[in-house]
Length: 314
Image 1 (tube, rainbow, N blue to C red):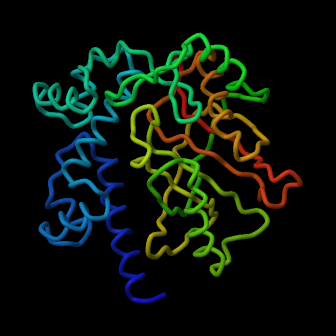
Image 2 (cartoon, rainbow, N blue to C red):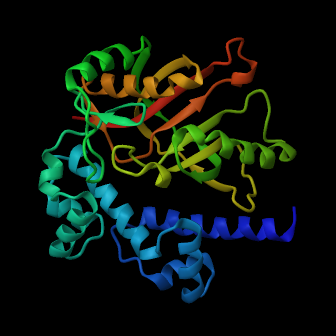
């Protein structure tokens, strides 16, 4: 590996450390100097480097992550007031929050809360539980025959599988992060496997995990944060863009699937359709997939996977 590649990996690792800090401290003041200190850059250089590598300024990134968390909580924690949610997500001034929210979502927080949530996906279009096309971040609804959608969704969303509520342990992980569409996470696994193989971390019992940090009904596809991970049972010294992480312990809706790569969207839709009638609702934690096989070794190239969605009672 040449010095240019090593430098890029080190820079990416420092930026990811900052992103993780932001996720964990959204309810607090996050200033440029603190972020720069975490990245071990001067504030001047950090601002330029972060913007170059992410396409957003540090302050714009923090604001977007806060707004998207507010958006998730407005639909999942309907008993809480808008003001309470905004303050808990780090907005100190409600007047400023209202202006920022409207600018980002093209509607007020109250209007957003009253709208149907995009639960299901088909070919990149989001639909509500009732089969209505739902806009994202102020974009116009897709111009599609709603009745046709309901019929087609009924046929295409549901899969016959076992889904149950299960207490899941925290999984100790090593991860490689990428940003972009879910179905491109295979590229991140390639990088992770290249790093893990010479360190003896790949064997017949190794479990791979994909963690998804953003809601596709809220976040633009190119900005979604996804982690390709391996479960480890010992301390591992990480380098470059590889880092340590873990899943959150707690209750999850867990669905078991044996599917081709084209059926992942349908499997996730099945999970949310089941969840909408289960007496549970998603809680604020990242969902993930656990892979129990190497699809290349399957006679039909299928994935044996459990989809795990963090939940709490309604």
